[in-house]
Length: 458
Ligand code: SUG
Image (cartoon, rainbow, N blue to C red; front, top):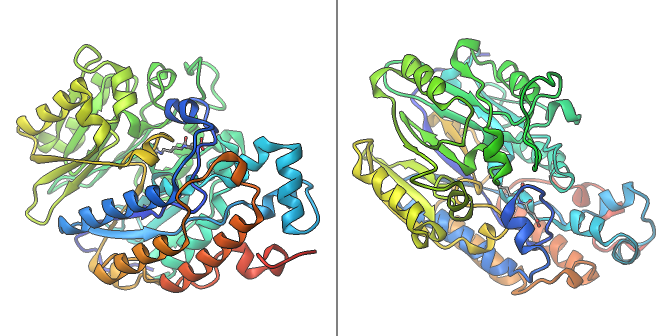
């Protein structure tokens, strides 16, 4: 099955922040998550900040789309691990006996859709289709719970087999731990085939390769190799650099904490990858003189500042006039070294004309900046037309989503609220309504299986 190979335009699929957004302190190696664990969150503010970013991006003329939150608390998971009775009893028992497990089951981490999947667009693949591999997120328990619903949602959106192939996630095994597009960068310039970077933090099978010491290397080399095969990419258009172990140990749990690339431009920190010089040479060979990069040394931008302020966790967006803009978190404006680096990006002749700083504090406090909140899907016009749900953002959809958040979200959420059965009922009502707004059909277990329903007292 081959679709016509046409020009692609990037569509940014942002995760809509879920009604249980909270600070669970769940992600070892993610400095912000570890620092803010236990604090009171505001799901409503978080969702509004995310929607404001979507509005800003679509007003720049960049194609924007949305992916829905997952049902949380994950009552199915709690039942699977032995909590029984009515939904209320399941939540009460988990809260009393295993509060940490309840926090895992309540995480709204699916909002960071850079981790939803890895995508190869149709001009790059051998069969001319757009390929998607949902991430198994095996490295973190609260995130591994996302794979099934993500797979169901992406299969629904990209359901037309003439254009799309949605694969199952990689096997849920430590050797194939896959974090999705957060470790993947596609660089493409006029006149030569795109090149894909698949970065990894550790090898499951080759103990000789240096691994980080303090924090987990989430993505494996073996997973990255499997992705190249599944995405139908020619092996000579894929590079597999290692994430720098010192970068991971400093808090760069994903590549996108220290690097972002798009078109022919790469913004990166010296602790993003092992052998930065060798990688730069390979990219110049693959992309020619059109490849541009703005490299930050640790002397210019200490890694601690890069991890705290997230200047690389920016969106590098091509606007309709062909120039690029950077969407950076407000924290990067306040950090002098991060801000000076981004000013240098604009001053240098790499085609970036402006930096816009947005307030995403609720997400940032869990380690998720602008780049974490979006999955990039380069698509042809024909592919966009065949999307099987109302997820491409236009003004009326944004208004519908803003009204939906206003009606259903709480202003504040503390750890002690997570077992509140009313919260679970609110979530089911809200998400059921959302699937109608987005015309997604029944993608959630609680919609398919009365066993998990909000009403169900058994
Ligand atoms: O996997 N935080 C996410 C942040 C993901 C950021 N994504 C990218 N870099 N692309 C993570 O560590 C924290 C949840 C908590 O502690 O409540 C969390 O899962």
